[in-house]
Image (tube, rainbow, N blue to C red; front, side):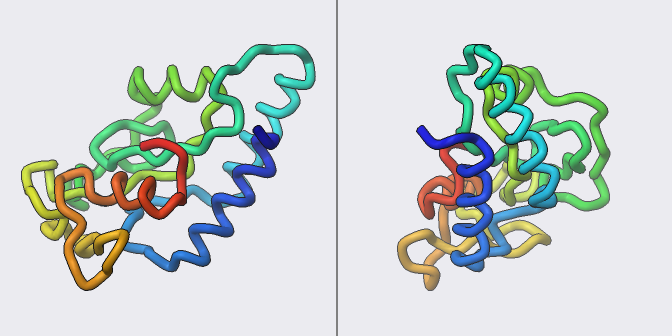
Length: 150
């Protein structure tokens, strides 16, 4: 596997090339993700074992990521958590870099990925169709190869 910094840079290049802004509610500034990745590379170089080092993650917008708004697809519900949700914290501890939070049907109650003030998430294969599911942004981010996991 390539170094974390190299993989983060490649992920942001894929995101730019895909031009699918409706996938994301909040995309971290690339510089922030690169700094986190460089720290992971330094930890690996120092001999630390991080089983997910270099993987990139998108987090559904109703799960807390420290420093990013948690919206559940509803801007008036938004709050900025001080800490990651336990699952996000464990993934980060294993070396994953969070790139941002993804779009979803508002409050995760829909079936087609279109009920969001952030826009309908288009299908990964044919953008003329809906993506489906309340985890639409996360699913499309993985299907388009923008991230390794969501």
